Image (cartoon, rainbow, N blue to C red; front, side):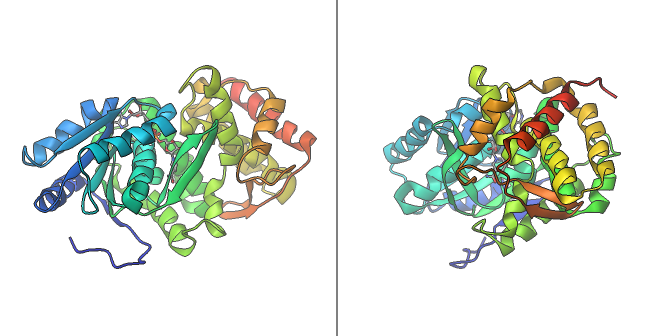
Length: 363
Ligand SMILES: NC(=O)c1ccc[n+]([C@@H]2O[C@H](COP(=O)([O-])OP(=O)(O)OC[C@H]3O[C@@H](n4cnc5c(N)ncnc54)[C@H](O)[C@@H]3O)[C@@H](O)[C@H]2O)c1
């Protein structure tokens, strides 16, 4: 594999059944000249590392570090642990970090690699659906800090991303649904055609995911290429996240990992679609269709959250300016627009709507 030209803001993304074979070839090649470091979590160590190891020569994977599973692991202590692990094994500028896991692993691993010795090369091998369609691509890395999601991080592209849907065979159904929420989000902000497909489709079971993942990623990749540093159009990818992040943090405060990232985004899209109807004239039918989809897929895992706490949490988010929140709303499908809201009553109404839609009977 050739070296990426300096300044090129585009990662190599391989999406195919068998991408892991390609990854193993690359790692073997790399291991001839320098050391490999593989970061996993408890579950990907158990289910995914053996698949990769079986494809590489025994001596290829030299160092491995396993973190506890779950978003709470994306913290400064674990970041320091990764730096310490790299240091203790004399990782140098030519070393390669392999992030083998979901979004937690690629976020913290990418951050560690991009800061260790001012940056070493890393590749992502995403193993969850959410990481395949979203977290592993686009170059955002980071950790949670002071109870704020992704408060500290970098923009650093992985050298390559190897997406092999075979890892989904061991992924729990709830995690599949979590990743599916980001696919729904991509459909709503980018493509009416995709939205019309996704809202009627049931979750693929053993069906080949490759085409669906490729489609979903293509939307994100286009946006990332035109606005890598998230100063304009890339912010549309935050749709569902203004309410979703606050919901995720508060739900997980009392009980770690109670709510999955994608579940929180699915809930956040309820509130933000409600606001889209009120403020942007989004046809109410889109909101109704989304509520039906939400109730079919996500209702079992939602928690009722006190609106006032949620509003306070949103005001403290790094993306919001003091005294206002800045969600992305939709004028229509595939027509996202930023909005600034400082009306607490309206925010409360959106939260009440989402809470009510969450607890109503399944359709
Ligand atoms: N950087 C970005 O652009 C970006 C975008 C979206 C989300 N994120 C971040 O990604 C994270 C969420 O990603 P996630 O949902 O992948 O979370 P995760 O990494 O915590 O994975 C979810 C669960 O699935 C398990 N798992 C992963 N792959 C498995 C497999 N093949 N078999 C069995 N179990 C497996 C994990 O161990 C974990 O328990 C959040 O931290 C979020 O902030 C980042």
